[in-house]
Image 1 (cartoon, rainbow, N blue to C red):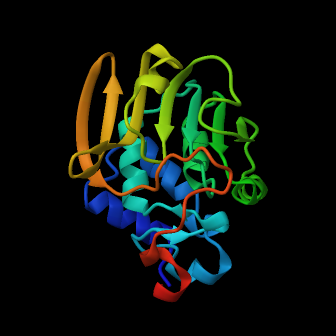
Image 2: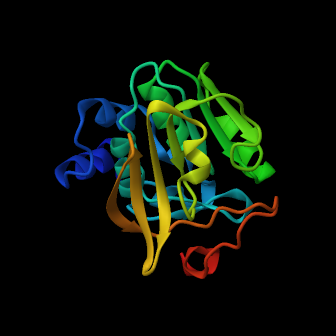
Length: 211
């Protein structure tokens, strides 16, 4: 089995991790700590993995791209919609002293991530989208696919940034919103934003029998 540092080295060599701050955050947070026991041997592979409640945790390269695009400042208030295992939340908490909130609709996922996260500035909330939170955020990250930035923009500070997988004609693309400008980045495949507590069905390729 490789180490977390070896995984980070690969992401740096590929140019996906570019900044020193993001690199250090990835070195400080071991992905294996956020992967369920049956899949810990694959923790450092660049692949999505199943977690509790029929959800998945994204591959490290996508999480690294999300984190770089979000460009979190040292005092930013940050929210992740679809916080899943808590791995991305932990990385964000390494980058800011401000409040970091993770929201997920699956109670089992929330319970598991709360057990793994040990940060004074982190809250993991059960809810749908922005329903359980108040106020504005400097950085907004969706870890589930959405149709548009309309809802998120209502919760964004004037100089804030949104990063999300957004549906386009051919699938999904990682999209960034900053000061009225939208840029498209890598094609991605995220599970959809859902409004039901049961959560989305796990895609066939990520099920136990296919891993």
